[in-house]
Length: 123
Image (cartoon, one colour):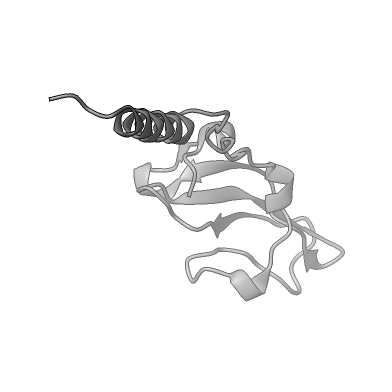
């Protein structure tokens, strides 16, 4: 049986159009989104915001004895099994507790093992 020329041309046209659409859908210059920046600037952790405080935080405010020093702990939101916590020192100056300074970022779930803020997994 002989297929008429118009049917062969139409079949070829549909096949070519379908193949072109398939190639266009699977190719192109689409790239995945860039990796989110997970670096943490420890200087940003010094300013304590009581409105976002965690019940486990240790952070003094108010009147104190001049020159007194105490540990401070500021818990950050946990993610992927890591409980980041900023651990530093507060010093009393001018009869008022200062900010939580000279600290490090630790994992409170792992015995306060120090964390590298540049390698934390994204939340």
